Image (cartoon, rainbow, N blue to C red; front, side):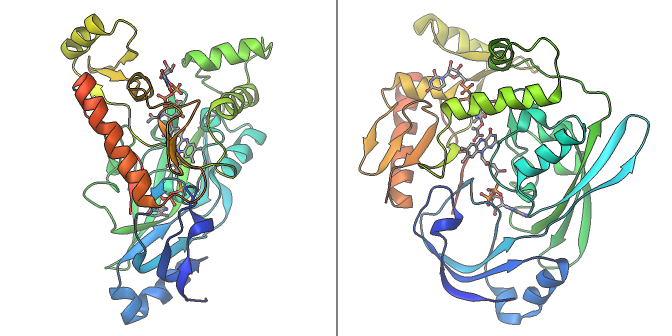
Length: 338
Ligand code: FAD
Ligand code: EPU
């Protein structure tokens, strides 16, 4: 295992921010992780676990050690009457796992097609899109504790999944390196086309016989039509979460702003489309130096070329202030600020 010093992270984050790591190492096995942590100096250093770098904003260089998780492998570990249990190494690319499942007719991940990043990060924020979240197919994960150096298994309830949330972003933040995730996938698909855009795209595609392959294709088409490709423009997907507000506040806002976009949640609250709020404040397509707000999706902040992490962060502060001022609603960042 090669330990690099002052290593550039520019190609390893989808915002393409030019930050560096004091130490950088790639791990391909549990033994590699143990070896790194047996080194007193490295073990004491602050650690940042890196996957595909698609949900991070570097605002400074990383003082400690960046550990890039490259643990590979996808296998069918169990099967019963209704389900397949598929285990994937944390370093597998998420979309490749989704494609593997679709090609084998393991149903459940198709709505999550084309989300960037790796399997190991998927439970961190309970990735979600087009009516599905990983918590709907998640079975268990294995994670290595950075201090006790032991492996723990977490089941669905242990992860405390919420909207773009898990225990690993809260009370267990920075304590574990997730090494594998196992999904419980349906033998008989339970198609989810509840998200309006998916139904519309399937119709546009002329699909009259639903399949997980068709849903995946529809989701990929929608994503490609409005989300910027990080290989072309730096970004980390939605920069903010969609805020949840009480219905009473929603009705007051609806009175003043009749076209406001919100969806009713099971708990009675309303989830607002943050993209709409940001667009209404005039930010869509705005550019400040090389930092900007995407022209097609106001929830996505972009780096056109050489923006610094702090410039993107400052832009996010301005957006949060103007949304607060106009609508009285607090936005919360989804992207992990480093
Ligand atoms: P990274 O960015 O490398 O890491 C994210 C966080 O997880 C960091 O805090 C990191 O320290 C931690 N981490 C990573 N791996 C591990 C591990 N093995 N163990 C412990 N901690 C770890 N997200 C959605 O939910 N839905 C979407 O629809 C969506 N669309 C996107 C579209 C675009 C164009 C982009 C660029 C991003 C999008 N995202 C979306 C965000 C992103 O793809 C997900 O959050 C993804 O899971 C991040 O994976 P990653 O491997 O890149 O994680
Ligand atoms: N909208 C606008 N203007 C915009 C963008 C959106 O008015 O510039 C309004 C429109 O009314 C639109 C609605 O917002 O119909 C919803 O937009 P979209 O379908 O694009 O979804 P989103 O709420 O902006 C969320 C997730 C995405 C996920 C999609 C699809 C969050 C923070 N974001 O975006 O996740 O892919 O739904 O499910 O929940 C991510 O997390 O990085 C991400 C991209």
